[in-house]
Image 1 (cartoon, rainbow, N blue to C red):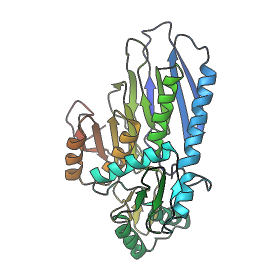
Image 2 (cartoon, rainbow, N blue to C red):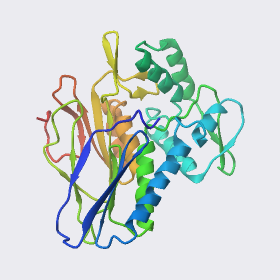
Image 3 (cartoon, rainbow, N blue to C red):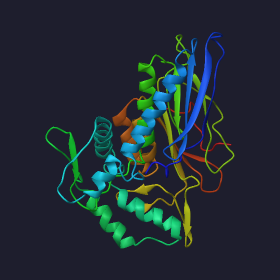
Image 4 (cartoon, one colour):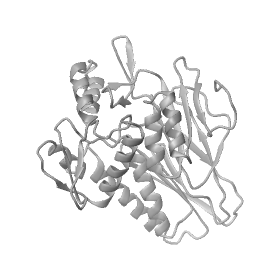
Length: 336
């Protein structure tokens, strides 16, 4: 479910240290959001062809991994859930599934891509303005905490063991696609680039002297931004949390983010920004940090090691810092 994940808005500023290097930016729509590629280069020969191939790769990955497309590999696997039948998959789908299983283990179930059925029920709730059946959600959450996904002996095929299990890659899909596109640009001869998949950003540097990009982070449902631009290179940045895709049902506001352990949409106004060496990791870490307790988050970042994370609460329109792990270089409780 790519289109239901809208991250925080990122923008970047560039240095002018390389007069001979120019920035070329291209944009299209992928996964329900703007998909932007910025390339820094001295010689733009072949750039249009490279960008075309990069966008084609993003489209191909979306067609394999999206639950919105009925002929995607993911949709075929979902339709066979509980039948005992394996379905053949290609390398990208296999890779993201293996990464998702690792994330599920590390987060103790707070990140679980088998959450498709609860996601569908909450999607319908937003559309109809009615609460989903809470008992059904509870039962689904219980079932998907067990083993849902099984690979064949050679890992070329996969099956879902229970009809309660339905795959939804919204918690890490955009970061995965952005990383694959950046890697493709490097193989095509454009090693200095930044890819923005609807707010999930991956980047190298701006040129051969390894100049970083300047990235600013805007806080959702607020006029505030982080007071300092971040100088970043060879990393990924992702944000997740309560955005404009929320719904009021009764007296409660519900986020689009769901806790797979309960099946419930989150009710707090929390958002998280993660920085990591890989786009998929940054994406799922930001998602998991909006679901996990602060104690769970603290243990997780220690396990992961080389990551940075900022968790904010914005109940009253005044952002409050709940957790800061190496992302901003000062201690504060609020952002103005």
